[in-house]
Image 1: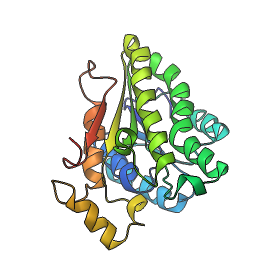
Image 2 (image 1 turned 135 degrees about the vertical axis):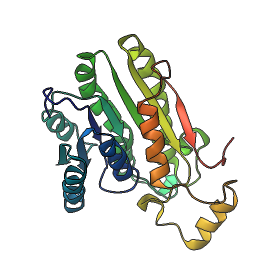
Image 3 (image 1 turned 90 degrees about the vertical axis):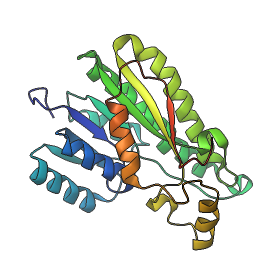
Length: 245
């Protein structure tokens, strides 16, 4: 991606499915060039990139990258000299007792969910400073504030994302770069596909909206956040069907 394009450029991590894929769709529909990443589902990501390019006449670059690895993020950012929007969506979950969790499992979750935000934001800031504008959106979770039994590492990583978002927003506000997070409730994604029908029904009963959210609904909020008034920064915006109020 180069600065010669008249279109804005958005980078969306974890874009081969779910919220990332839906976000790519809406940004493409609004004329953004895209840099999309995934760790392993390149066939799916290439298919998405080809379709979005053909449908909307944009440039779309699919990149295989493990966002928890600093060297992969460094390589990713070497492919562009322009960035207007960064959506940190790549993430992973872990379900189980903390007492049975290995150190490698803990560090892997922290790397993918939290370290990745450090790597990408550090690399994105100089690109956004050139235009004295930009929007960084970190996909978080309600468990980052509420905490979830059997998901201690995931909850801790998302709590870190929330604090990271608020602190970086203060740092970048003078440069007209917005940093916000979106805390998702129960969303119909592959990450939640491991829930049994009984578990899903039990969780749904707790949600006033009486259903899981869709990736498309979160993507709409991502796009709206990227285009919010510049005075809106440092916010953790919850989308959970009224689950936690």
